[in-house]
Amino acid sequence: EQLWAHTTHVASIAHSLARRVTGVNPDTALFAGIVHEVGAFYLLARADEFPGLLDDDPENWGALCEDVVSAEVMKKLSIPPAVSEAIADMRGGWMNMPPGTLLDTLLLANQYAPVASPLDSRRANLPEHGESALDFVFDEFTLQEILDEAAETAKAMGDIALV
Picture 1 (tube, helix red, strand yellow):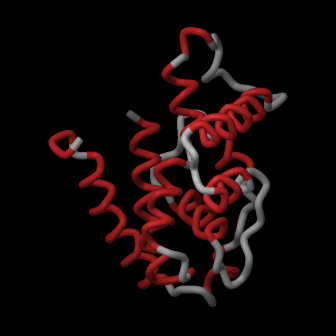
Picture 2: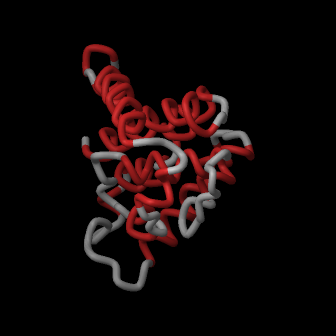
């Protein structure tokens, strides 16, 4: 449930950011947000085969495993290369200023998502961007509008009646 909540928030925020900030195709951003944790969904679905999956991982083997699994699952699902490359680049990726790529959109959406992934490998390894670095991209009012709009979309995607 936490992974789905994280995913819907990232997807919704990415969609709003694409429309209002980065200029990326909003539908592509939404799709990328939905599939950005596809490896984690696969691993959780097979958690019985991966004891300790959610344990602390100081050597980051879990992150490596998630990256490899994500790449293979995206390949099997024929995820477009632009989307799979942006997702693969999230770990350790650096946001351009001003943000204008799908990777930038996903990094920002992941940073502002109110629910962390239960595997949390990407968020833990994201470079921190100070608020001052983003001040020239959007003001606090615009950010709040984006987050409010995204919260409504995420709520709709999380509503069991719609699934």
